[in-house]
Length: 372
Image 1: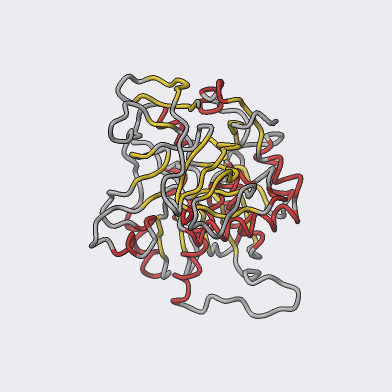
Image 2 (image 1 turned 90 degrees about the vertical axis):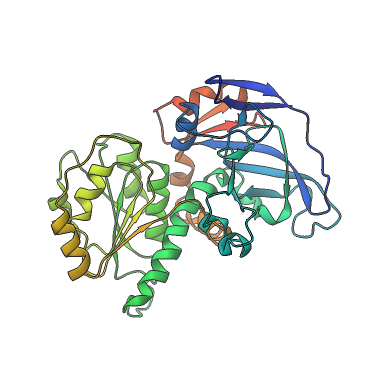
């Protein structure tokens, strides 16, 4: 079978041939891969910034955003059956008995750093024809989400952030007063920094939860990333025309900032106007760059006097995957055209390099099954 791979040592990308995997344990499931999404992480791996091949291999099969179809199951598999659509998790636990997070089935909070990540670190990814994985890492996807299920994994970033934000905010009176016909978050205001797929999906999740949501990014109309937020009930503000202080004047007290841009300067500028009792959640991983000049005294004063929290979050666990599948179904019911418009480029495996390096569109995917 074929796979899209990166050779870190040789600094090259190419389609390679692999032996087709077989089910060899009672709890294993064989998947035919249907689609693989590409993102900034894949671009950085393809630029050889990081990415570690499995032991014994000089290459790493790419792909951590995926959708597969079950084709075979081991005798102890009970949750899925042939024909089912599934999305696998990405991170796998470390082997250290002392790692409480991994032993509790939450490797996204691994203490040791010795976790593995499919398509990223020490384990082949999903950009190949077939994959064998353990049932416990698979999440069942309803058939009606077939065309958009590739968005589940990037949506898990927002879902994990919301799970943590809601947990952290139990420190104070956070719940909105009950009001007939209004969703739970109707009294909160959120700003999403960045209008890429992670930012737009995060904005959808916040709108779906009832937040008054603003997307703040560089793009200007008619760029689709500047236009789409209005289609699902968010407000778009371009940083090209409205400075941070102007954004704060429009929004009022900012309860949540969901950062999805990976731009340190923009993030710290926005942190200066974070509201009282608020949470600033970082999800972007910037590349190393020049040092920033920030007003550290003001930032620290605000953190203390306004009871603020700064949160960093990476990867996602089973709870976030289940929430993402549930909410993607809600998005698909409320805003079907918008959800589908997030997927802007579809490529065959032979052209997998093109979507990785492309800066066009919103979400690019590789079609493993050849269906456009």
